[in-house]
Image 1 (spheres, rainbow, N blue to C red):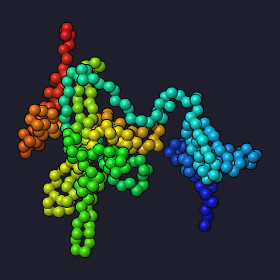
Image 2 (image 1 turned 180 degrees about the vertical axis):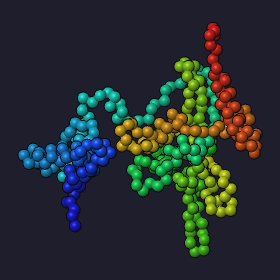
Image 3 (image 1 turned 120 degrees about the horizontal axis):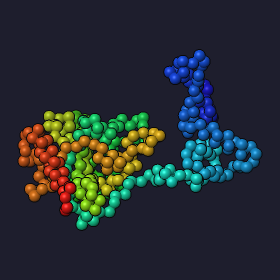
Image 4 (image 1 turned 60 degrees about the horizontal axis):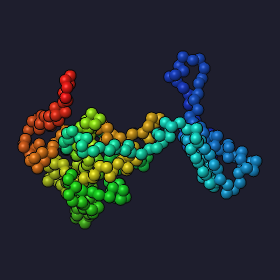
Length: 347
């Protein structure tokens, strides 16, 4: 059986692939060397291995030595890979020749909200919206449901929130969108897990990512008169799923329930760390924090802040889904009407 002693034996042994489409008009054979098959996904692995072996050969690098490199990418990854296998300590620094734009891009943190004073708010309204995960534009919040063949930082929004709660990153979890009462980890588990006894067996029924059908969002639209801009600030969100005790039984009526509420500003760090699209893409990866703050989802208003106890639309328009949608559009239209400023005359 053919094998290598360690991962370094695979460096350079990348496949040659015949080019067909791009070279179909050429009379010669054209082959491409796929350097991404190197263990560090880069041709720089070859250079890193050769540099270290040359330093070992002429005595500059001895056992227990330290590798120091100014790098911003693949060279450092290659040196780290070789250094770990060979037992060297590695120190990597960012070279001062890097552009301000690249340094700013590497400072991967949630975008800081700007300060807004109450005196600068001309108008505001709090609304609750339902994000239906059956709609194609909202699918990035639903997938992936199968995590067996993807990286650890690629999880669904529900799994990301649940991981943050269980690891203590998200410290406060609530039973309602007004943050009146907190719930504990055991209370959350009761909403997500139901152990049913069937004969001599105990069968667990669990609410997982594929059972989440939507999200309830609570946010505030406001008009910043200082900047003359209509803005949105997300305040809270809750995953919506079925009652775990009713799943798979005759009592399952299809009704969706708010499983738990989180205060959105407290979740931004972990939602920013979770990338929605491929983090190895050449463009800057997108996180859940990016998507939610940019309102890259489609939602329907189900409640507005009002003097009737913030009642839901379904509470005063019953049994007619079309009229409920029209009422949601009316609320949205009235909100924009309030912000119509005088033009072509003195104010």
